Amino acid sequence: MSGTDLMAALAAASTDRVLFDLDGIRATYRNLTDELPGVEVKFAMKACPVDEVIAGLAARGAGVDAASPGEIAQALSAGVAVSDVHFGNTVKSDQDIVAAYRLGVRDFATDSLEDVTAIARHAPGSRVFCRLATDGAGALWPLSRKCGCSVPDAVRVLDRARQLGLKPSGLSVHIGSQQMSTTAWRAAFDRLADAIVALRGRGIALDHVNLGGGLPALTYLDRRGEPLRPPLSGIFEAIRSGIGHLRGVSPVPLRFLVEPGRHLVADHGAIRAHVARLTSRQLLDGGQERWLYLSCGKFNGLYETDQLRYRLVFPASPAADFVPAMIAGPTCDSDDAFGGDGGPVRVPRDLRSGDPVWIMACGAYSISYMTRGFNGFGPLPYEIVQAHDREQAPCPA
Ligand SMILES: *Cc1c(COP(=O)(O)O)cnc(C)c1O
Image (cartoon, rainbow, N blue to C red):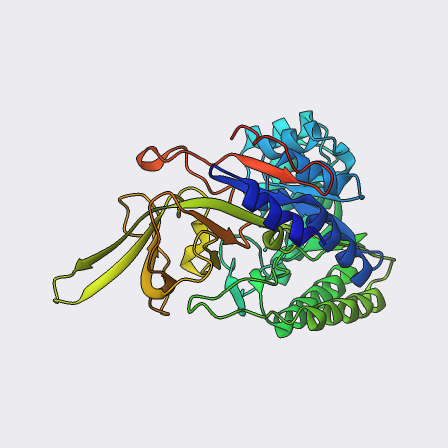
């Protein structure tokens, strides 16, 4: 069991680092391709821009959803074929398009006449897929207004693409990150069907539909510290039935792809941090409050504490007397703390500075959201855990 390897690697780590269980990531990938047979996977690499993870998934057949020339270059150097990389960001400057085209990318996301006109100019003849807006309802992080357009606008954009010599190739959606609702998937499929019908009326036949990200991680705790329990099998069921529906609506055969980020990596990463200090202070209202300050927080691995709490393990205090404490990172920023409405977390009373703390389920958006050194706390190094070579030294950050 790969989870055991991750715990063993946490126990063996004597300094702070992020650990990624590559076998666990591959097992989740295999489960995904079993649940959605025939659906192509493009890993949204911003969730874990780590060469070994990108290469490990590419070796199993995954491509990459990249959002900038920097991500494209990293994917290529990790060994992903350029034909398996698309530029999935609707936000790009002329220079970004030029750079992506020079690197060999020929598949671009778009959602506006301005952007599609720039693609036609700087990446002539390329394939473009138009992102439809969604409302993000049901997701922990809705991504509703910044990207994507209405169905009538998508028809205008893809029609313009055709006039400008591009190949209008597809439609995409992103229903919000850590989407907890199956209804959101059904609504997205309905909108995709409307768009396919409207495009058919204009004589535009697409060759693929990109279902984006949003598939959930399974082991998160919410802001009150309760397990989130996403309805994963219902989500897969909604996706399979939506795909069947779209196949019936489309005038030509369609390919389907998904762009999971979080789902593939979140449950298979953990941080080995340490206790900075457990303190107790009297506050202005006269109340006494304990705070546990960790070596790691919002600016070096735990950015998503706005919506999540992480499960903490205290291996040096196996049979402790527990006391309630607020949890915070090491910086002077007051946002660098577990947010939410669940109040304090129970921690061992006898914690001492330097004791190890294991922070679970932070394989997604940990490496990518690290600052360069807010208050001098630098990004953490990472280590890849595999069943057969567990003794590797940490890689440089
Ligand atoms: C961030 C992103 C993803 C991945 O989202 P998750 O919720 O982590 O799966 C996929 N596609 C696009 C276009 C994105 O911006």
